[in-house]
Image 1 (cartoon, rainbow, N blue to C red):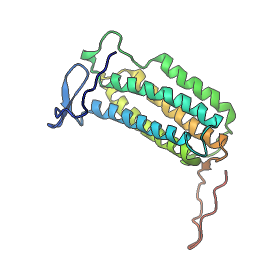
Image 2: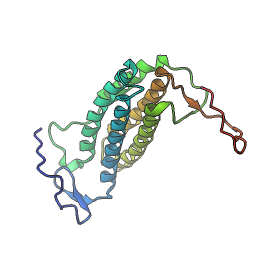
Image 3: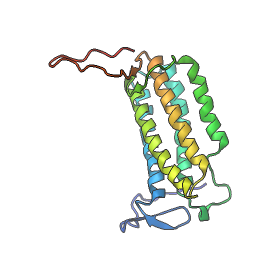
Image 4: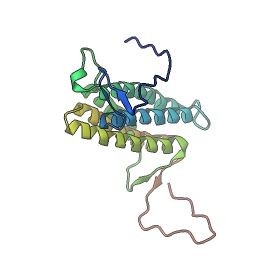
Length: 210
């Protein structure tokens, strides 16, 4: 595919509409626009995660390189997914890239590679575990939001079920990665403690057990 972008602004969206693949124009708050907008936001958050992995204390570590390589590939796939969501059924074309069984299976295989290194979960995990681990939790929640919007489109027959399934598995992978990088770098996880008593006034709360 040949892509040429000569300038960023076009003024064509000043009336509150934007174009889909195929040329159809819809309001900028159309569910389809919202769906691939969330995928774009997710891609941006993954960019932040990768930036954190390239800096201290993660920089150059085998753990950072392992997660970064996967996230770099996922960012490419998310751009393909965004294009798929931006294409209404009547504008689908030969050679169009779609998320499918192979993409979903690859996400599952990456989870299976990391899972043996993780301790058994005995409580819910709170966002944390170092800067990269915490940002992976942010990515996970954005991914869930994107999945909810894709599910709405799927229910209306406006997108492939595999698009929503892909986002579902990806959110699981991001959760597993957040756990894995926290343990691999020695940050540990913060677990939810049911009924935890608040710290006394004027005193800092004790550090949560790992």
